[in-house]
Length: 53
Image 1 (tube, rainbow, N blue to C red):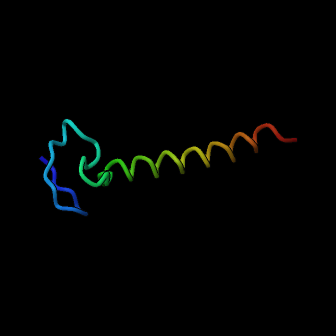
Image 2 (cartoon, rainbow, N blue to C red):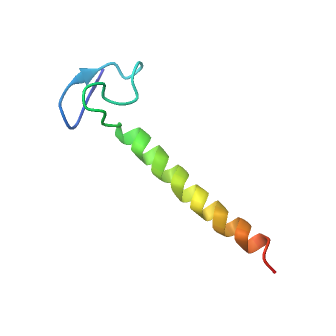
């Protein structure tokens, strides 16, 4: 079970990745999304650098 940091509702973590009451995403998913966004930006700059003359 996991408790939502915003509304305080308890919900099963295995069943939901976000709070079913208010929709707050857990910290793990926030950090995973942020890391993915940073990697996508870095990959874009790296590819641009590789294929420009």
